[in-house]
Structure formats: structure tokens, C-alpha cells
Image (tube, rainbow, N blue to C red; front, side):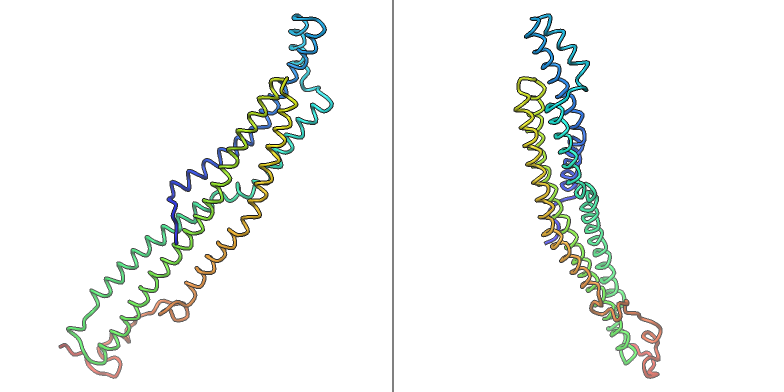
Length: 282
């Protein structure tokens, strides 16, 4: 099948994925900020209940100073959320490490097509510039034409090899495009839900629900990323199949005896070859 996605499409989804990962990396600071705001409002509410409006203002300031000293379940929730963020990043690490691979696949696929064009041009040159059948006959001519045909067959086979390799690499690139596209879609949904949860936490009043929502959102996306890792087994099988196809294509192809390009040396073009018969023009 070959590649159905362009390099621009591939780069676009990889850039999107990188941006989403960067948002996740920055999210612990947002968690700290949300809980800091929650602590301020909690202190303000406590002060207000005891001392009225002035007490609330004093409590808000007090919370601003002591938010790092929060103990108990509130602090535990914050640390749990941050631990889950770290777990998410760890589960995404393989995908992060492999970012450059699909681009390399597609670029290599295009290079094989470019090489195929050059090989086809060489084949046409051999056919048009070295065909002397209308001017040359005899056994030496037959020997030359046989060697020439080996060259033509070899260029045809090399062209087919380029096509096979390009197709295989393109298929591998498409497989990884699908992989990262799915990541981007689900991480985008997670970030929307997670941001909403942090907003609830920051209001103070909605903190309990925000904490629950944040933990649930992280649990869902971690499970999906783990499932992706399991699903990549099928993608890797596809890629291994393509690698085997490439290996088979370059292993002793037609006209490449012992994996070597067929040579035309002086014995094939000598006017005395193969039986001291002189060159004869028609």
C-alpha cells in the first residue's frame, strides 16, 4: 500500500503529541497552584466563620503563607495526583522516545522513490545507448548483447526493490501516524477534564469533587496509554512483516549473482570474444 500520509501530516501529529506531553509535564505546577488557592479559600472560610469579614481576609492571607504546611488528606490528595502525573509520563516514555522514527521511515521511503527514478533513467540509457544490434553481429555481438541484457534485467530488478522498500517504509510510517493520532485525541480529552478538575479544586468549595475528578481523569488516561502499549504489539508485528519483506527483496535478487551487480568486463566487449571471431559490422 505504501504511505498514505504526507510528511506534513506526520509532522503535524507528532508536533501535537509533543505539545500535549509538554502540557502534562507542566501540570504538577498547576496542581500546586490549584491546591494553593484551595488552601487560601479554606483558611478564609475558617477565619470568616469565627471573625466575620475581617477574619475572612486575615484567614486568606494566613492560607497564602502556610499552604506548604497543609497536612492530612488534603496534602495526600495533592501528592497522589502528582504521582499519577509522573506515572502517566513514564507510561508515555516509549512513545516519546520513538518520536523521530516515523519521520525517518517516511523520509527514507521518499529517498527510495528518488533512487528508483535514477535507476530507471540508467536502464533507459543502457537500452538506447548500448544497443548496437542494427550495426553488429556475430558471436562477439551475441556475447555483448547477453551481458547487456543482464544489466537491463538488473536495473529492472533494482527498480522493483526500490518500490518494495519505499512501500514497506511508507506502511510503517502510516502505522505510527495512527498510533500518535490516537494518543493526541485521548490526551486532548484528558487535559480538558483535568483542567476542569483543577479549576474546581482552586475554588475551594469544589475541591473535594475536583480532587476526585482529577484522580479519575488520570486513572482513565493511564489505562488508555497502557492499552496503547499492548496494542503496539500488533503494530510491531506489522512493522516486522515489512522488515522481512525488505530483507527478502534485497537477498540475491534476480540477476544479482551472489548479491553482486552483473559486470561487463573486457571479455564481453572484445572483438575477439568468445572464439577469436573478429568484429563484423552489418
